[in-house]
Image (cartoon, rainbow, N blue to C red; front, side):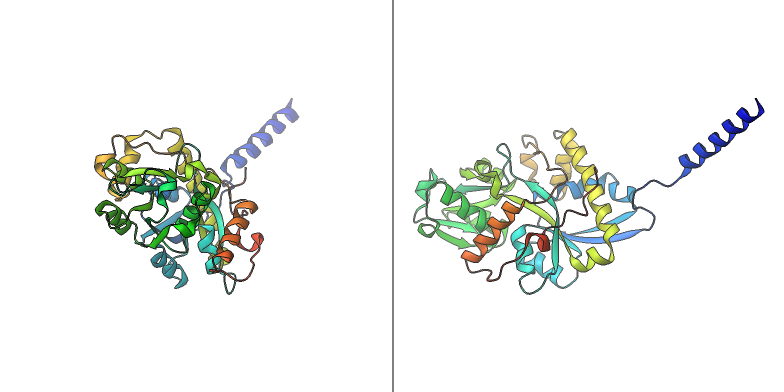
Length: 322
């Protein structure tokens, strides 16, 4: 009887110690990351993570830096003023043109057949009612970016040669919207929710990447120096994003989310009531097929000359382990 009591006592002590043991999450030391992104819907999980204290949950401080254009974003990362960015595979390929400087560690957002990232909208007086009508018309894009890549892939898929369309580079998103509204551009490719704003104000939606979702997705990318010297911070960042995505997807109609987008000037207030928050992609990285198609396009356009490998650019090892 005495031996049995001792055994139970030892077992209770062991279980107590196990219960007090630290959790197997990388939160022991405080860490800070600076991330830069354009003011687009894809940033929503970061905003939610900040608002809901999810970064703090993982002992992480995240400084969010808004950028007005892709070139501005890239300059901040190149100068070391930001650790990571919301971009796309094409941008990562440009960074690694001379040497390996960045790696993609996660999808940020991905188009689906029900939710677009980009939509080509036309001025109602342009005469453009279909993709075929775009021949000879001016279409505002951001040259050398995912906007041009997606636009050309959509045109080709619909049987229109991109060379028959006057693709006009307007890097700043708000300027692109203004030009199509004024009629100085016949059409423009815009991210959501700005595309929805344009349609609400009279523009005509011609085609979106929801028709060909394999071509359209954004990513989270970090400098290799950060991945090497502060890997746990990046892992914590992705853990917090996963928690935020779960919250958003569980209740996409939550008014708090829309208000957050309005406060950060991503969603215009008049659109908040009818806007539907799309589902956000869970942990994952672009496929090798997606990577190769982007690389092939960039080489064909003359933006890149040398090949790059999937393994050098895409790194799934920082994703939360299932």
